[in-house]
Length: 417
Image (cartoon, rainbow, N blue to C red; front, side, top):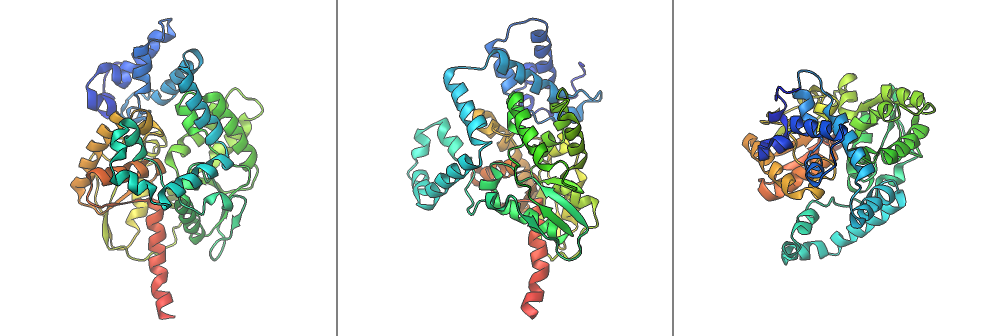
């Protein structure tokens, strides 16, 4: 396709104005490599600089599945040009040792918590030591916080529904989220319980493999997918829930990821028919109306992999509209990527920060003190944006706002009693 309607939907093209850093330009390069052209340093840079936000898919009138193309290109790069020794070592430690391991994540989270709790983090930032580290200092500013007690302790538990049980759902807790978004996971369970769900957090689950897919590590992603399928398929669930839109997009494509695996393909198809984003699920049921007032204004940032990958836009807004006294104010360019994109803000920090600058202009134009989104990675990026360019806004997941609203409804009853 050559129409170019995707150009304005592409964050890197909007920043750089370069054809080779647009979806159309990148597809042209992929075709050349597929036809025998060598994988050059230039090709590696242009493909790597893509956020894989899939905004171009929404803009494309012909339905070109760009996300699959760029993931395939990265897998080919990983096979033929995996990088130098240090790059391979870093990727091995992050993707094969840290993310799939509950023990490694617990150790890393504990060290991160000690770094924060002992005051070293504040001291380092106060003394300006981070500025001496250049790009590494910028990355440290994006490091997720540690939130003990970690949610790992809840894996394997079943949480009863509040009142009459209407649904039985499984909750996928993620990997890093168990350490850095433990309170979000707890809020998700509470909101599901409030809505008549018996919530099972199955033992045996782990990292979904989304970051691996985006990095071209499809073999590793398939191994992680099989583990999750073994843990969840056949559990007699009405739905399988995630609160991370970036994970959800990959989870819903397990059947594509395992299309050539005759043993697991049927499992993958059964799994994907049940897979739901938490906002998608809550918007599809009779929502518990016992919501208390939140007298404030909120704006909403579309997670790329929810809006463009899963085609879910209305559900989060619909849920926000149900909260009494919460005024919604639409954000300009709400579906343009915030620059998080998995680990993109680490490996391409400068471009990520440029994109974030633009995003914060849109956020600040709303004047809303609350910024809602539906993906933990977006939350971290927007929190960094608030620190650098904001006015003290509070960044929350849509589910966290619902949780606050349910608590606000229950509070007057407690006070009267």
